Image (cartoon, rainbow, N blue to C red; front, side, top):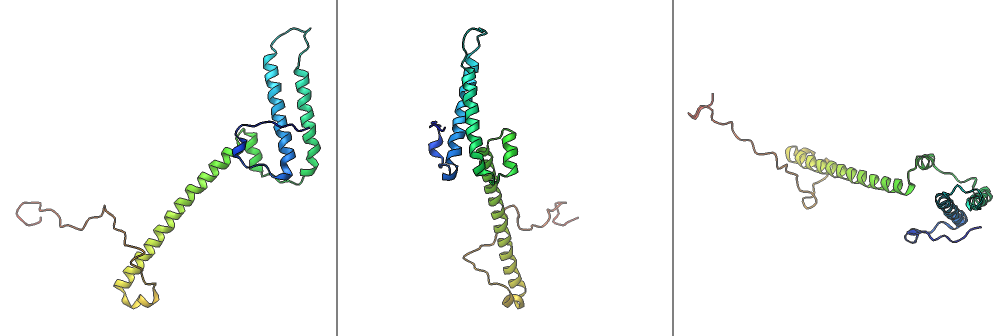
Length: 174
């Protein structure tokens, strides 16, 4: 009962898995039948009882599509669908948009964690070099710093200590 429904934008997406192509075709057909039913209802605003109305034919087409999907269902009874996906669909959220949002959020969190890891590695390198400098006896137990790989970080907001200002103008401090 599947017919080819041209879906704009589908060409850029990957095709459905082979085992799901029949369901995919039937769902596209159902979407097309529902669209046709909706447009028929909107166009049929006449209250004339004597005119044959095509709404019944469109409803029957939708029922046939649902019946075809029901016939395919025994093949997919063991298919597990995450509960969160079903909740998102029930809440009228597009799974494609949700997936994109989750991937973007994961990428941001990944960058944040990479920054933390780099900061910890930089701190460890600075700590190791300071320990070697101030406690030479620990040098054999610490990894040797690689000067080419890591240069010490100097915070530009920290300035060298300067003596307090002369408060009384005489060259002496109060």
